[in-house]
Length: 273
Length: 267
Picture 1 (cartoon, chains in turn cyan, blue):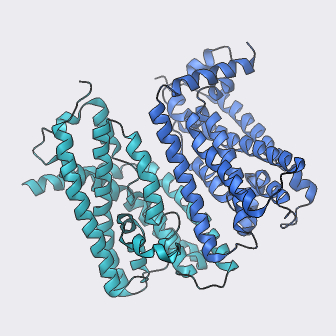
Picture 2 (cartoon, chains in turn green, red):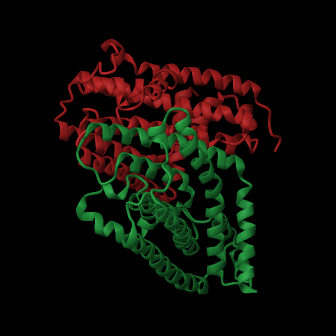
Picture 3 (cartoon, helix red, strand yellow):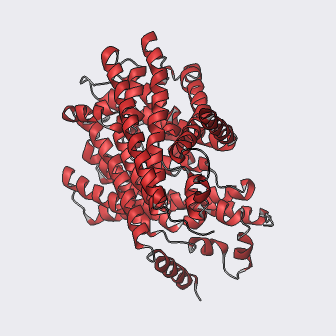
C-alpha cells in the first residue's frame, strides 16, 4: 500500500512534467548550441598540442554530448513547487499526507528530473550520434558505448545518478524549508555542482594531485563517473567502485536529509494562511 | 523632465529598493562571482594540460574572457526590463500601462530595474583583466585604453540589442523564450575564446549575422598586437565595435515595429 502510494506520486509527477514540450524543445536548442561551442573548443585545444591527454578527443566529445543530453539530471535548484508551498504556507498540508514527507518529496524529485531529462536526452542522442555524421560532422559525434560491458554498466549508473541527484535536490528543498526562501540554497548549489561534477571541464583534465579527491567526492557521481563508465575509461573493478561510490553517497545524503527534514519539520513555521 | 534625469530617478529608486534586501543582494552577487570565476578556472585547467590554443596563450585568452564578461554584466544590469519583458509585461498586460504614460516605452523599460547583483560578474571580469595584464605584461597605452573602452561600449550595445530582440519576440510569443539565451549566455561562452579557434561557418555567423566578433575578437586582437589573423584589414579591426551600435539600432527598429503590432492580452 505504502509503496503503491509512492509509485503513483512518481507517475503523476512524471506525466505532469512531460507536458512541458515547448520548454523541452527550447532547452534542447540551447543545449545543442552549447554542445557545439564546447566541442569546437576541445577540437582547437587537441589540435594545438600533441602531449598525451587523460581523455582522447573522441572521449572528450562524447563526454560533452552526454553532459548536454543529461543536463536536466543535475540538481540545479530545489523543486520550484515546494518553494511555492513554503512561500504560501501550504507546506502544512504536506504534513497531513499518510506518507513520510521526506520520501514523498524524494520521489517527486526523481520524477521531476527523469521526466525533464528523458525527452531532452532522446533528442540529443538522435542528433549527436545519428544526425551529426550525416551532415558531415562525423568526428564530432557522440560515440556508442565503448564495450558491451560499458553499455551494461551505464544503465545502473544512470539510475544511480537519478537517486543521487534527487538526494541532493532534497537537501536544497530542506534548506528552502528552513530558510523560508529558495534563493540562498539555489545560489549556493550551482557553483558546487558545476565545478565538482565535471560539467565545466571533465574531471580527468584537472591536475593529477586532485584526482583521488575528485573521484571520491559526492558530485563526481552526477557526471564524471557515469560518463567515464560509458566510454570505458573506468572499467572492471574501478567502474564497480565508482558505482559503489555513488550508491554510498546516495545512502549518506538520504540518511542525513531524512534526519534534517525531521528536525526542520518539528520546528516548522508556517507563513500565511 | 529630460530623459537622462528621468532615467537617473528610475535607477536611484531601483537601487534603493534592492539594498533593502542586503542579504539577498550579497548572496546572488557573491554566487555569481563564484560561478563565473570557476568557469575561468576551467579554462586554466585546460591550458595547464594543453599549453596553448592555436597559438594563443592563457593570458591572452584571459583578456578576451574579461572583456566580454565586463560588457555582458553591464548590459544585463541595464536591460533587465527587456529581459523579463515577456513574462512581466506582455503576459500580465502591464505593457498597457507603460504605453499610457507620456514617456517613451524604451526609456521606461530601461529604467524598470538596474540590477545591482550583476556586479558579481562585473567584478570577476575586472579581476580576470587584471590577472591577464600581469600575466602577459600588457602596457595600457592611451590608445589601447581607448580601444578597449570602445570595445566594451560596443559589446554592451550588442548585448542590449539582443535582449531587445528577445523582448520583441514576446509580442508574438507572449512568453519570454529561452532560445535567446543561445545568443546572450551562449555568445559570452563563445566570445570567451578568440574567434579564430572556431570552425569557419561559426566564425562567419558570429561576424556577419550577430556581430559578436566585431565587439570582441577583432578589436581585442589589435590590443594584443595579433591583428590580421583572419585577414581582416587593420582599420576594420580597430573600428569594428561600431557594429555593436549598428546592431542595437537595427534591434530598436524591429522593436518599434513590434510595439505597433502589440495587442494586449487583456489580463
